[in-house]
Length: 263
Image (cartoon, one colour):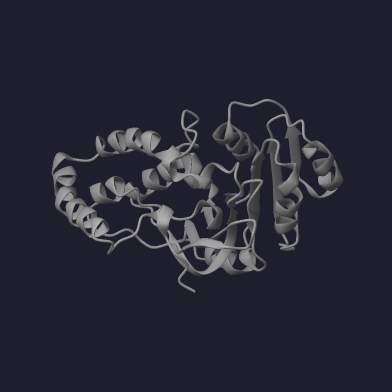
């Protein structure tokens, strides 16, 4: 038996993209799907799109909220699926994503699955292909290097949010990376799916169109997470981090924002 799946879409004034996102979820034809859309009170026609599909949504609402992470947490509070994921209203799943990732959760030991995400510009140019990989080196290095896997290609057991807490609502840009690191340093690592599962749409208004916006917020998160580690683990991360930084300066390692497609 495949697990019950809850998909959450947070949205605010994304009418040009919202229907494509919704269809990418519904067209998977997953047999036990709970789809929740949490709109922040859009004024651009998004509500008309939601009404068009409301018979196939488990729940939707359009009302002011405190931001993207709050919207997702509102969806999580209603989720009944054993497995949950969220897809932003300007991104979309690729065909076969659910049938690829969800069978992994038939194994009780799997609590997190992560695949590959394609970063795509509206003109069809591929900016990057982000392949999920397990972290290397000491735990402190994972934090310093902002290790993470593509959120839009990730699926988690709902109990992880119950055990580790919801997404942080004081974060606007890196709440997904913070959650991934929070559970990873606690010992929960993803099962890697070697297949493209989702597309991140890099239009001009997308938050991820400019990675520099994330830096200040992540620096604060890194300090907080590092403070939770024993001092010797923080110290051990420095040599690993220094080598990585040197390789990056020499062009041997690329920043996530500069990744190039590899197939």
